[in-house]
Amino acid sequence: MPVSLALAGASFVTVFLLVLALAPPQARRVRDRLAPYGYDAPAGSASVLAEPFWRRVLLPLMDRMAGVFQRVAPARIREQTEAMLEMAGNPIDPGVFLALRLAGLVVLAGIGVFPLVSGAREFTAGNLLLAIVSVYLGARAPLIWLKLKVSARRAVIERALPDAMDLVVVCMEAGMAFDAALHKVAEKIDGPLQAEFERTLQEVHLGKLRREALRDLGRRTGVPDLIAVVSALVQADQMGLSIAHVLRAQADDLRIRRRQRAEEKAQQAPVKMLFPLILCIFPAMMIVTLGPAVMAIYENIILRLAG
Image 1: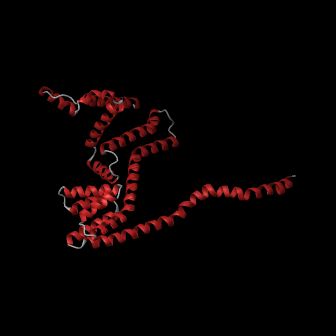
Image 2: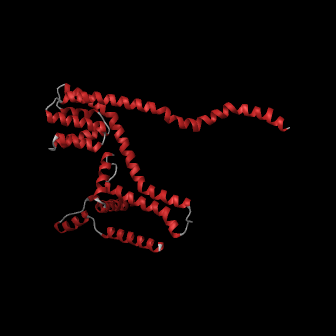
Image 3: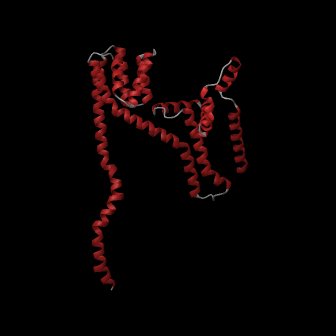
């Protein structure tokens, strides 16, 4: 039974890859349709065969498989994946991420479960635990990596946000409008916060309402401090309040929260240092301190009593 399942899966993958390979790409179909009208292929198309195999075959195949996985995936999973990837700065295409999740689950689950099912390993508690861990890692490892990327990007934005808001306040108090001040700050800073400011300004220039663009800014980053600033700005815009005064109060709160986070991490440092101290430093100190005393007791007391 396991052998038949493996053969069926291998046959399905083989047929799937053959269908993808035989189906002509969209660019090739367009060129074939334009050929009777005197269309010539680009001059650099002759050098395609000189490219590496992974660039000519593997990358296009991965892109097409990613598109297939993105289309067949449930809508809820696809939306959650796209939202998390957007919070992480879109380090990878959503379809590729879904394909990697499925591939990791199949490979690691096969490594852990298939030997038990086929009888290559004995059905013991250790092997069963190894199979469970393999399935868990295959299902959760890509998500763990993505959550780490999201946390790292949020931390960078949180550190840069108070200084950026101070610059926005200074620019607005100097007479600039909010959009011009945000553009000036985006020119002076770098990192993910700069990219988010530039995207927000681009959306406003393309016709989106400012409050909607700011709400999208908070939603894309997922940073609580930035969401609070965005909510205050939207409320001030709707009520006709001075945005400069609101930003000044928000900048003060951001500096206070940043200092509180630094103090919290400083208070957590002794607790975090306790375990390395006990495991690494304390045994060496005990050996250096009590070693000579133990040797003296052994030579002067234990050996004499034994003699």
